[in-house]
Length: 292
Image (cartoon, rainbow, N blue to C red; front, side):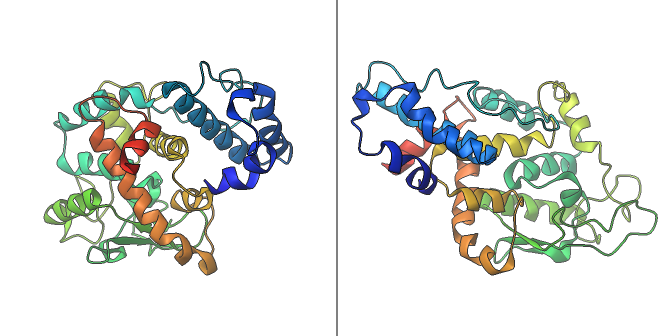
């Protein structure tokens, strides 16, 4: 909402929605894009599209002026991490529930999905980092190296401590995990040597066992894309809080300010996943139901 108040409402907020055209919607979004704030521009486009969709669904408009906005923003080249659209979440969650590999592997999959952390941040996690009473996971900037394990000193990619609030579902998973690996230093030990950690290919291998092509359909890193897209489309969350949850930006003097909002955010995402276990629901429609 704050990004709309900052970038969109000053330009078109006083206009009657019935006279809005695609050009009206695009003008402020393209202005943000021109300032090289490409991620913010893309999210504004998603949110404006969601608002126009709501107007059509509630007979406020006959058609959406946002339908023709695609292709108007700068295309930013980035490493491709395939991610599933929300329509396929029920299928994915069903396959995940039926996964018959190691329980630790399934927990790794589910925690990656629930917390949006990167592969190394999860695989090298130590039990001392988790506080289940406070429902937080503090990922340090660097970790104590594990002998014979490459890159085990890796902590946060951004090289500063990152606090990950844990939803109820994540806390429950970690409690189960403690019964499996609680006597080890690491949370996700290697199945052959408990002093070492889970292989970096474990999550993607499990996805392939579940029937997914990790190059074209979904990969472990793609969970971050899925969460980011859903939170943006819901139009519920402050952009800064979303970026901090994804640990794209993190400064000690502001992180506490957003922690409460991020805690609500991760719980919303977990509940949204639960809502998709039987049939698909869009992030915007789920957010609308929660507002009632």
